Length: 424
Image (tube, rainbow, N blue to C red):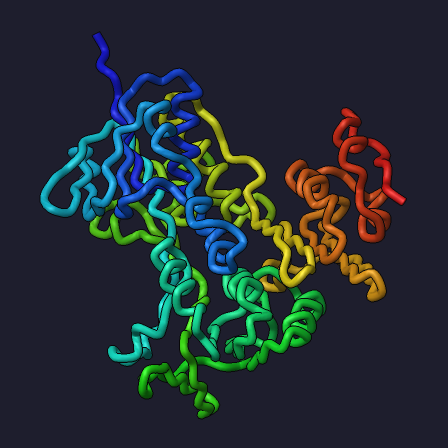
């Protein structure tokens, strides 16, 4: 008589929740143990800036309530940090001396915001990253009376935070190490459009800057840059990207590069151990290179694939590449597939209509579209994503893609994916 398997999941966010649903979708009746260092139900870090900006209530950050864990028969171990894995004995050791055994283990520990290592101890109360719900609570409170805020980094998190507080009469200064905003998602020409919007709202942007030191002066922080500038701030928000939380596998034989190395089934090199989400490093379907793709959509998709495989249903992640869709200061933007020079040289077609605030750049490899940067007109982002993921031959209508949004229903409804139809 076979006994039920125990599926242990470390991480209570996008990848972990998706894995839970996938396991149960297969009808697997095994025990699911969900371990989380945070003592609360799953919430969305993506929504924290909306909470800070007062657009949603704090309660709306949470993705699920108690009923989710009950309905999916999940045993919660919250407020306990996993500190060590023994892949041979198949045991996860937790803080305070307890442990949890497993047959299958999913590491979905996500990533942590990179902090500044040049902050004096007495200045640290005025410096915060923005990754957790505790970070959001602290920043929201600080913003209530802040007059000057310094933001380091100009990635998506930083710009969404700025969007949340702009217009409150707060002086905002952004320190950017590169020579453009959104350097991980956009090229200089498209980034300049977002820069203009920010500066039009009174945001000061200083490029080529790094933080030499943050000290305390009175009841404020004082930021000293590599140019010798001194900037006073009631709050310093650090937006310097994230680092995968791989500490848990240190000392094991689990392979790690930037993230935990996984194949297309989200399997690590150790039997019965999977990884998914921002901690996992998988194959980019376009470039073929291994990389961590730290997006919410990717975490959900990887978690589902991991869950299916844990339940014994072989499945592979298809179409894994970077993609971000958002709106910043009224500008809708989408970055899909390749978008950075270091990813290779690709043939490009650009279309720009300044009057309508539209910028579209498509990147091609042969007859296939492999990347898109869309500003102002992004309603066909999903269709273009499908073209990229499927490797569709678009040679007959590539110029039209650049100039006019694709019609969603009619192209996806056409089974042979022949001539598409375009909106006027």
